[in-house]
Image 1 (tube, rainbow, N blue to C red):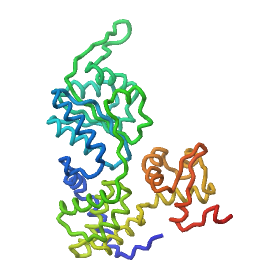
Image 2: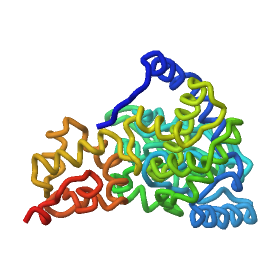
Image 3: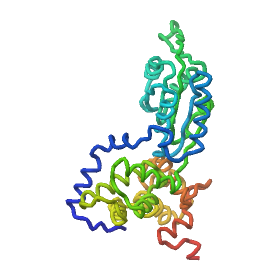
Amino acid sequence: MYYVGTHLSMSKKLAENQNKDDQNIDLTLRPTAWDEYVGQEKIKNNLKVILEAAKKRNESADHLLFSGPAGLGKTTLAYLVARELGGMIKTTSGPAIEKTGDLAAVLTNLSPGEILFIDEAHRINPMIEEVLYPAMESRKLHLMVGKGPGARTLSLDLPPFTLIAATTRENLLSQPLRSRFGATLRLNFYDIDDIKKIFNRSAKIFNIDISPEAVEILSRASRGTPRIANRLLKRARDFAEVRGTKVIDENAARKTLEMLEIDEVGLEPQDRRLLMTIIEKFNGGPVGINTLTAALSEERGVIEDIYEPYLMTLGFIQRSSGGRIVLPAAYKHLGIRSREELL
């Protein structure tokens, strides 16, 4: 669909630059203060009230649950909360906590007022959750010591701490776990103006010049997601450097999207493939998610977590009781006549 008129050596250089120091750059771009964190104003205001109240009572803050698509800033918010409370933060993830002993080791090593951040909380084993409940409610750790008739329960007191959990699949969290959070805050896709602010802030950190036209083009292709915006900025910077220019202009922005096969609204090849599969193989839908995963050879979680949220925001796809349906806006964007138009 896209013609990439770029010399092979340039593509090779861009590929080499893509992975170099990306992690360090991500840390550099991460906001370290509330005024640096763009967007999500309602969530920031709610958090400020919760944290200020906790500080006035000289208590640890309520446990917090951040949910929403990947790349919207859930981890950044966790670090800002820790900074606001003046405490340290320990991080882990649901898949990393394989046994109750793993969780016990983390909890017993917490200091008073410390933050425990668990990413991908929806992947916590149900048996692990049973240990987590009393830890969250009463700061007690109940462990089973021994086996058989001689087994006994050992209870340990835990210091005051705040658990912050992040998830992209809130519906997969058990109700008992969800109910133990003092606040559940859902992050939404960013609007175009906030994404532009993020581009300009990141460009200043990179110490590079970017034209307003380039900001406009790249912002509209960023899927309302800061992580993607920063990724596109890094690739545009690479393209400009390889071309020997000091400014990311409109041409550099468009060429960057062409090389990445991203269109003007941020659809990637996988998004277009999903839409075309439903249109061509299932007459536009509805098609069940299990059938769709088989047709795409893709995991269900990837479709539901990565592709569908943004496509639904654009009004390109709809979830119904019968399955997924491609909507007229998607046909128009892809330049295809819909069933209604053909009839």
